[in-house]
Length: 221
Image (cartoon, rainbow, N blue to C red):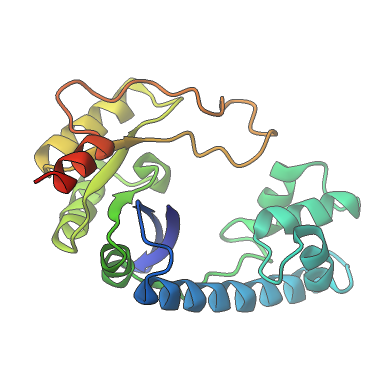
């Protein structure tokens, strides 16, 4: 699988590609373009941190920590921690790295349609990741999901730890209204996320079609 960042209506969304053929040339080309965008973004984050946090060679040092040339923001957060500029990972994001702060850099990701097309070209299933995390109103989420479905989106991540009853009810309303398959995920990125239990997920909603069942049905149809 893969998680592609896409831009739609000037916002970033994350689309999961499940059961993709990793050797598919269309997907490979999309991954290469995305990686180039990540490198350019990381270089710019490094330049901004050198100024805003009084560091030197932030990009190169983050590359060493990550052991690659496209370090994401968590590696810059780690660098800030090691340099004593912040108290912890969350402080690094709140002070420097999240949207609206001095070292935040938006990335020119591919469009929603391009991301889903690349996943489908590789034989995959396209699922919107953590829909509650985009902090959209009910109206805006439903509007976006209509566009996601029209672009070929297949599923919605709905079984996640920590959802409020209101969030769960909204997601249940959405997968039913837009006839989407459902998936589960923890969005676990680091042991510092102590509020998340890796691999410990609530059950998928009754009556929904999990993406793994939908995949099995498509292979046998």
